[in-house]
Image (tube, rainbow, N blue to C red; front, side, top):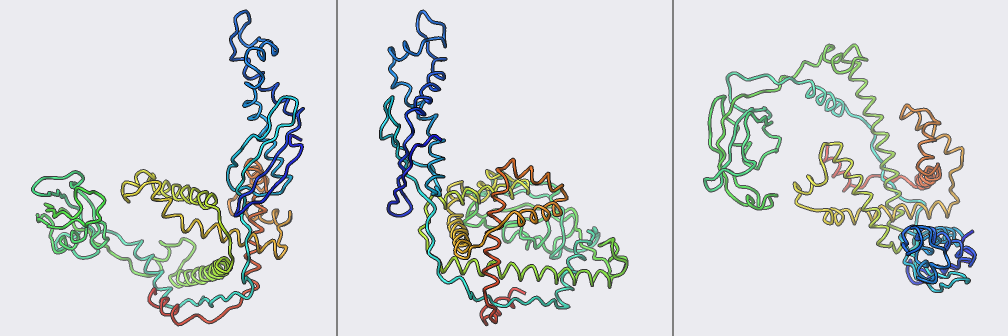
Length: 447
């Protein structure tokens, strides 16, 4: 054990001072290791590099020259063991001050530490959860079938006709501001779905009515908030030449359509029934998420905690990583997103700050609920979850266990399961109430 003695003194807010004593023998061992490290770099006439005797080194440079390296060697283990001994939960890197350092004596240092805040729980039982409608209407099923119909649509070239909303056009265009062509304002054989809103407001509307082979000048004004400052608020003229009009040809909803959409069905009625069952399953999942999200948010709103900035910053960083991964899956980088959105890393973190604080508080609240209600996850829970993961990812259970071991073991999984069981507790102890008229109106508007 590196730390001979550790004492935790809580101060105001979430900070405190951890005083740590390292045994003089341990410090002497660290000095020996420090010497072996630095002697390789020492060049003294009469001795080969790395072969200078310890006594001569200390006469020439003083034992104090080894102190910093010795502290760097002994401090990580001493701090880690002191944290375990005092059972504190740091949420940020400590500020270290050396109090006493001298050969032959105990090394004493103080660490100013920001720890996880204490949570004062408010009401977390009998939380009201508005009822969730899981019914599936005929209109819901038809809407899903219409989506499948759209997905199976074919684009057919319109030989004789005008551009309509929903058509896909193939065109050349070149944009001018004050009579001068501008960068990024030109393309050939460009495909655009009219009504998609991909282009600057006013552009797509003026394509409507054009015929194949027609050329037309279109005048638009760039929005004031356009990402390119050189173009924002400016009037531009686009010279457009229309090559082709392609229109969706929708399939008939019959048995052949059903088999094309889903190889596991033979008739349209079977497809319809399958879509209805899927919708019912999805609604049940939505209900479960609705209940869990509601109780967690309400329990967190009713709790109070002084959340350290370090925890919010760490969560913002985690959210940035998640956002970056989503962008990469879409073939986009963060730098590309910054350019398009007109922001930067600090701007993004500021946007995430409110949600990050909310996430941290919800997690702290759930930990406090688990502690208050003696909610625990045991080894059996871990084994069941490993079985579930093996089925979901089609991987061997022991392979998943090994992957978790490489990331620090199953302790993190056990902690996650404990949090999930805390949410289960909140749901089980909540009460369902009728949906408010206001929320019913919002739901109807969204349908």
